[in-house]
Image (tube, helix red, strand yellow):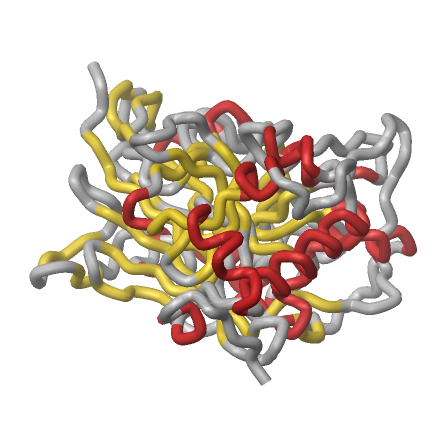
Length: 407
C-alpha cells in the first residue's frame, strides 16, 4: 500500500513518499543554493532541518553544502537513515508544525545542477539502438560489431558541459562532410537527442581498485534522466577511428532531481539473457535492470516511448567495466546508459532512428514536419516507474530548447 503524506496533493502525483528525490534549489529571498527533497509540489529545505537537531550530528554538515556531493560520499548507511527520517517526518502530522515553514513551492524555486559532476562516461547499452545504427551506417554488414556482446561499449564525455534541465542548448558548429562533397564548417544540420538514464556515483574508490557488479548499490547513489545531445553530421565525419568527440561534447542535459536507488527497489526487473556468457568480471549474482517507461515529447507531441527494462547491459555491468582496468570512482561521477530504444518503431530514443536517418519525417507541434532539431524546438524526456511502496513515481524530467548557433 502506498504511504501517505500530510503535504496536500503529494499522494496523487509522481513525487509522493514513495519517491523523495534530492535536488539543489534557491529562492529570490535566499539565493544561496541548498539541498532540498521534493514532496509533491513542494521542496523541503534540508539545510533548515540540519540547522536544528533533526539529523544526527555527523550528518548535519553535509546539508550545509551547496550540492549533494558531501551527502552522497557518506554511503548507503547515511542514505538509508536520512530516507527513513524524511519518510517519517513527511508522513506523520506530529512533525507538520516543525517542518511546514521549511517548504517552498517548486514553482517558486530556482533549480540548480544537483551535484558537482566529477567525470562523465556514456555507454551504448541498448541492443535495439546499436542494431538500428548498424543497419543505418553499415547496411551491407552485420549490425553489431564483433565486440558489442562481449563488453559494454562506452566513451568519456565532458563533465564541464553537463547542464541542468532547462538550460538552453546552443546549436554547435563544426566540420561536416557529405558524400562526394568538400569539407564544410558551420552549424550542425543534423542535431539530435539521445534518451538516456544516468547513474550518479556516491562512494568513490582508490585508483587500481575494480568494482564488482554485485557492489553496484554500495557505490551508486541514484538515478537521473539524461539527454545527451548529438550533432550527427559532425559526429559522422570525426568519429573514425577514435569515436565521439565534438559531436557529443557540447552539451549533456540532466534532470534536476536525483531519484535514490531505494526509491526504485520495486522497479527492479530481470535483465535480458546474454549470449555469449560475458567474462567473469561482468557476471552478476542477481542480474537486474530497472523497468522505467520513458517518454519523449518534441514540441509538445509525444514521439517515442522507449523501455529501459530491455537494456542488454545492466547498470551494474557498466560500473564494473568502467573500473575493471583500475580506473577510480569519484563522488559525483555520472555514467549514462546510452540511447534507450526498444524493438518497435515508436520506441526509438533518438531522432536519427525515429526518422531512419532523416528519410521518414515525423509530425510535431502544430502539424509541422521534422527530421532533426530546428532552432526553437523543445524536447522533454520524462519517465515513470513503480515506487518503493507500490505506487507510481515519475523521475524528474529533463528538458532543453535549441538556440541558434553563435558566430
